[in-house]
Length: 282
Image (cartoon, rainbow, N blue to C red; front, side, top):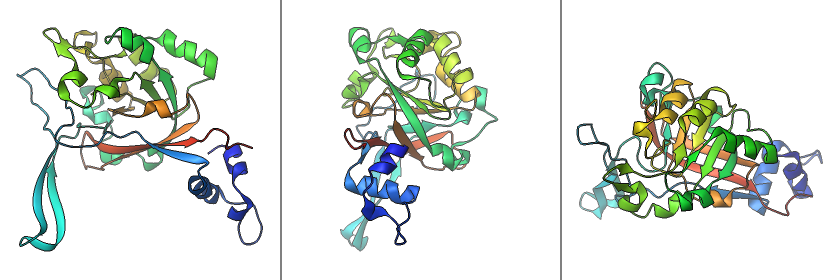
């Protein structure tokens, strides 16, 4: 949280001794008072959530499914609960380094340090470009142009690519946008993926699409370069994000909460963003 946010907190949040409020007290006060907005970046998880489809010769992920255990009935008169079944990489989810062969000896999702799950984020907006070309690729030059306008990417933070693709998440077919030549969705070029992984200071990449790679990435060199370079560099991915339009280009803080599955390659995640409301600074 910025110093200006803390300064905007009312005197009522001060400690009983009259001292300045602590950082956490200021944060809670900002949340309760509305100076800080919580934006949910998570897609609802259900049986209709789109999932990645690979060629039939490969193993496939499961769609999300609930199995009712009891619902205020003979199986359990006072309670309702379910078992659920899903793939690790279903819906809004977190990619750990061991998800890809290049990171096979690196961290699983349960080993991601907790302090890295709360990090600053920047949002790069490519909605206009993607509206014209669903195969649009983000290049290093696009990121450098953004930095010339807004400043450096955050050290240990997230690079979030806003493309407007989440508007298609209501169904599998428009979300994957596939034809006889394969899926057509935006993403990073191989050179840009390598730059983000190896030269940029960010800890990971967040996207609105079904995975961090572009739909055509199976034909890139290397194939699926975001996965190959990011995972191999010990960095992370966040996918199927929503509501990125509610975030400013800079200044948001992302809280990513994947299930800590021991030896898991990823997990569905509840992803939230803290955003300072316009006009809350004084």
